[in-house]
Amino acid sequence: MILQKTQTKTARSNITIAKIAILLIFLATVSITYAAESISSIYPEDKIKEQISQHSWQYYKVELDNPAKLTIKLRKISDDVDLYVGKNQKPTSDDFICAPRKSGKRIETCRLNSQEADVIYIGIYGKADSDYQLGLSAHEQELVSWSDYK
Image 1 (cartoon, helix red, strand yellow):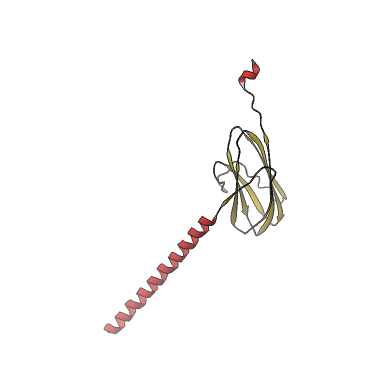
Image 2: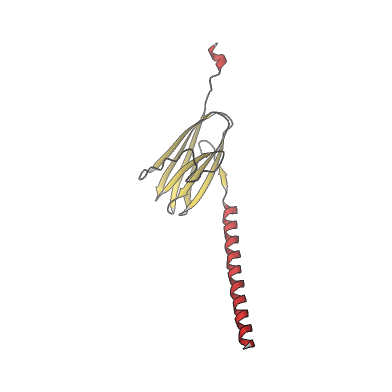
């Protein structure tokens, strides 16, 4: 009887250790995935052609030194991707300043008028494994000062 109880405790310990090992592997995978998510800089007149996996994000960053009119175009080459834009932070599907989400359209466009130097983040979300093309144009915006009206 004592031998059987010892074997049962050992078996339970082995199961507990296995559960802990699986949990640690899962947490390590999540940490690696999060750490691997990067933000690429993009510049006006850049044309980027990329692939994205289903249910994943790719991020780009635009640093504006001056007030500017910014046009961001996402062309869907295959399947379905969505464009999201955020100001001073990465956009999410719940937090963004522009997200055209035009179902069935091959091109999504966001136009922004930045009144100051800003950092604009562009998020591309893959609803399916997809190919896309991303383009960006910016034109300096001249602000009228009150002294111009004297």
